[in-house]
Image (cartoon, rainbow, N blue to C red; front, side):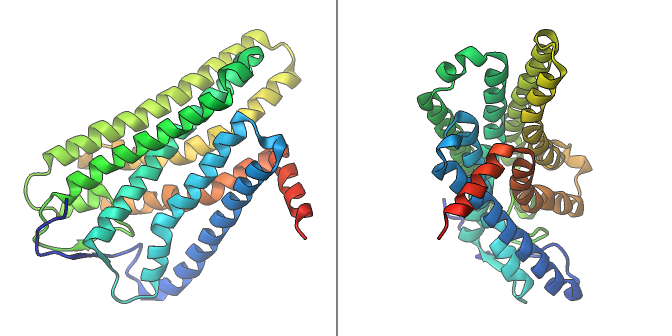
Length: 308
């Protein structure tokens, strides 16, 4: 798996090369990272400790919070280190590891959002059978499945990227190691790697997005056909609104980076858009869920009151 070339490390050029902005960006990213850890950690603690949140919806929300904690930890600590360093290096093995965990957690999250949409579909459209269909064993199996698929999807990219030859420049025009910037540095034929990126990754992203949209399509049709109360309609749609906002925040940038044609690709644009799903999205997710969900807010208040 290890690459037998002269390059033993890469240099991450980061968000900007303007030195005057480094300290300012360090403070901003540090605050965002802290808020991401605190917000997602609070939701995770609430879901685990409060029996009222021991339901499929909050089980998957706990998984999402765990993913967001790990997801931001893959890229942000190294970014913070590079803001204060003049030698922004990452070892070859460290780069491949960062690539692996970034795609592992990212692909798992997009599939988990599809599972969460299906959970809302069952809860709203089949309420009498909800506890039977979405029992604890089924929920656990669904969560484990998306984590396993995400791991092997990322392993495919990390193994194939590690087998490429890197003879020339080791400057990565990004703030973390990703497949597309590394393919631009690779020597030799990268057709197979690009095919995997545009076929396997697109299949996971488009498949998850399609399943999510399909679930919401059925929910909307069901509500308009079966629900004659405006109050009940608003309540049902409100339970889906938070999840749909998270879907838009994640899938929009992902489609821009990985599904857009390569001919229209710009490293500066990719780097800017990547900030949205790797930095901003993990910190917004807990805010979206807590601000719009009375049960989560109530659970967090109970957790705070129980503290000595």
